[in-house]
Image (tube, rainbow, N blue to C red):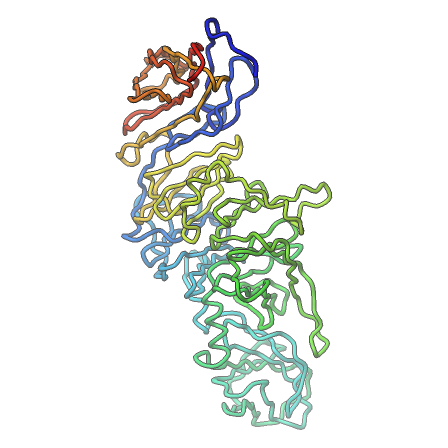
Length: 605
């Protein structure tokens, strides 16, 4: 190590807020600060300034209970913003216009658990682990339907060409959501008794397939045997009649299947080359159900064929998250396990082909411990596992898909490990605000770790009571634990009147000589010229007992920054920390730069 002339070594060291979270560039007038020890309620701007975070403005109170779900999208070409809270679904925006007074109550819905929203077929679908429901806009009005009641959903065509006496050809699989069936029969001009594929049917309807008209007379059915008998022998025809029948949904396998669908808590869209199938998961097992196409080839979120189930890995660990990544569906398990699902077909025993999805193991060591919270950030999944945050990215130039390479899971949380390790991953919520390039990890107490991945800077928000977040039309809305909807408002200087406690502290700095004592008497603070702008400057050293605090409040006259000289005298120190703080409800703060005048004095003892 080169020696330093203590009598002449004096320099002014520049510290920018941005550099407090990153290594500074090389140069005589720059130093390496390392990671800031604290960055609470300050954010790092794109140009490297340290700015007090935006305040919040209260918009709505939905009830005295936590917000359990938020969704923004389009329902039948109408832009809407929906929330789940206090046992109801609330509409905050309709046709692109926010409600000005009270949100609209769309209907009662269990919000004990988190509510998962997803858009499909120009409708909005909801899951909560107990119900599967749908919100629809048609003919100028909104409707709310419990899809998992057993009386709703697609009625599959289970068999065709059934002759008198039984037989025929199996076609579509039964629907796990209900006990509804339909068949086509082909009279031969001789028989009039047509057994249905199942017995103990509840009711029957008969239609003419040529005219689609319902036939209400001239036939009868026997529930126990499942037989439909025509009074007169029907004319010869091929699939000339459609018979619809219903089975009980209160007992047996149908009852179990409906409850399996209702117990699912999360959804993801995928089908290989297009997103025309819905995958439901999250019932605490390693299985996921996926939707099918109806007879006319239309994707249906209310049709889950009986065989459309995929088991991911071993049954001992449940699926915790599924997310589409390029041409694959990636499934993560809790606590460990990562698999890729690809589309294929299988041949059944009767030689018919049915869609199938194959799972391929990608990583046996890492998984995801936050149910349903995997986010795509710059097209790379982020998962929480083993006390860390991981980003999954393929570095290959030939394929963007995640493959069997453990190096693809990169740990990106080393700088926030002390905070992240104390979070309960089973209770956190994650959100990617892609518009502002910020990724949030919100704990159950409303604290948020925020990653500005545009500049790779982390900061920490407190006092917001955030539980869920949603970006809508360029604004970030917050659903709170107390049932409120807040707007993160850049013009707000407080959280609805409550002061924002901001604090930033640099890492320990030795100014290029850890064996040298130093002396410093001056600090220059660059602060943006904004109305009511102030900051408290604090110095900390290994020799200091009391902190020195100076309030810097430049005059407001133009948009140029102001440099304020602060006389903060500290001596005989080896290590130095600089801190900025503010705790007001009526001021802003933007620190542009900080300059320290440092002189080496003698060798440390």
